[in-house]
Amino acid sequence: MLPKLAAWAALALCAPAWAGASLAWRACDAPTRLSVTEQDRLLQFASLIRRELAASGAQLALIARSGTDLRRVGQRYSHAGISLAGSDASPWAVRQLYYACDEQQPRLFDQGLSGFVMGGDNAALGFVALWLLPEAPAGALAATAQDKATALHWLHPVYSANAHAWSIQYQNCNQWVAELLAAAWAPLDVNSPTPRADAQAWLRAQGYQPASVNVGWLPLVWVAPLLPWVHNSDHPAADLQQAIYRVSLPESIGQFVMARHPATQRIEFCHDERQIVVRRDGPPLPDACTAEAGDTVIPLP
Image 1 (cartoon, rainbow, N blue to C red):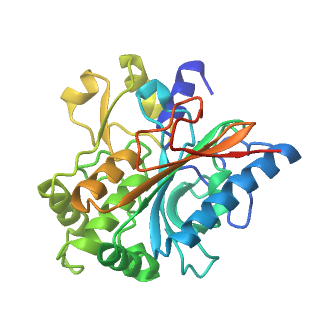
Image 2: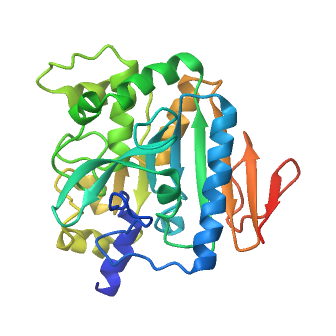
Image 3: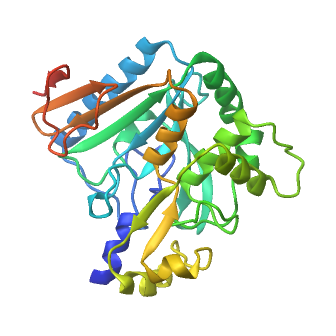
């Protein structure tokens, strides 16, 4: 990949994943190879998150992971899905949209929690966030997400990693999650000729704010169409001239959920090579995964 195009990894938001594999891979590159030590560390990390979910008594969680390093555009989390306690695949498997590189189209995929956690690109440092919703909105979302026909109804056939949040031309993984929230919580007509437009209209009316991502350098906008999973045609010219993309990202979805349902609990986890840190309902964890007062710390062997 050309050096300037490599920066577009920052918007490769929906990491492709192979069903049954323990690894996810991004932007149609080769899978990341993990050492035995790295695999063991990530399995411990996933196991702790699974135990936290099981202890919560929740039906589901909105879940996000740090995949590609997005710090250059002011974001930590790139990829969101719905972790379902009653998933047919396995307890707490994550239902998500991913981009199937070989087929060059989006798919829905139920991935075990361990595989989801292993989808990051830095085995030495990783972050996961959970949003645990109150019972009523969680139940409505669980019914919507777990029903395969309904979940597929909201899957758009044309993918773009940087899909504009207020356009129905393309869709990315996080936009699918945002529109699924509308499907669960809004009185939408599933037989409408424009269901996605209806979902977006409801999200906008309810105050949903997509992320405003400044890629920082206008030439990156010019070269974006050289990648088959990145597009500009759904973005306003004024935004493109400022190198800005308005896209759905996990934190924008999480903020919307918490504003709409203030009793939602946010739990954030991080790991480095020495420890796991857990923070409940506090400010974001430090980028270095260091603990502060009130955090739970689990040493890693």
